[in-house]
Length: 246
Image (cartoon, rainbow, N blue to C red; front, side, top):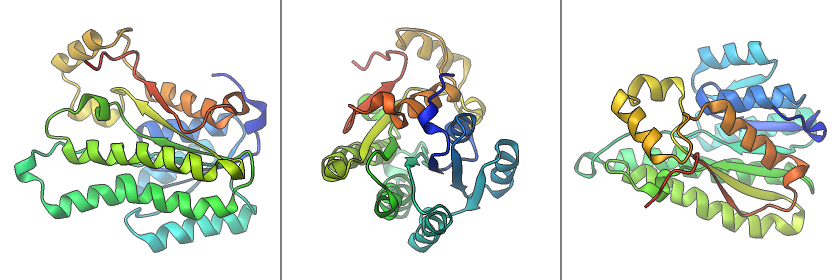
């Protein structure tokens, strides 16, 4: 993993940091010497990750505006400012259209998109020039797989919000970018979805057949948080090993 000296001591917020890509992001910033605050609803795993990495965990239900506001305000009071926000938390259920209720739709948008807006709104007043927001999107927006219409719609929203916020926050010196991972081998994906047939599909679809690991996505987030990417804002970075989208 490359070392970005400017990330040492930076104040970093990560949503959904207890598992998978989020946990890898928390660990990666701690290795850089950043002060990391993360939230998740998985309290047991969150406490374990916090103890292992030396980060600060708080249980936050991202569907609750008051919990988001209280969490970010508490970090602001403790540190005085925030340097980086990583909007990572998301749910990706497979639900056919005929079984997709309005309640399920609204809950998914609350976690995957509304929370990205709320966390950004609350963090930005505590950010200075040189700060950054990194949003996690997905290549599913490009692939549009069946039974994931609600999820794809939320990630389309994340990409739209990323572009709009980059324009709005640019005059303040705050950069906003999105990372769209390919199919990442998190524990949950391996447990629930990655069958031998899926492994064959992934290796056939990617330009480079190696399966993507959560730590590799974390390295892309580090880059977008670092000064090495100071000329990049309003962009979607595809981290998918060259998945053929056609």
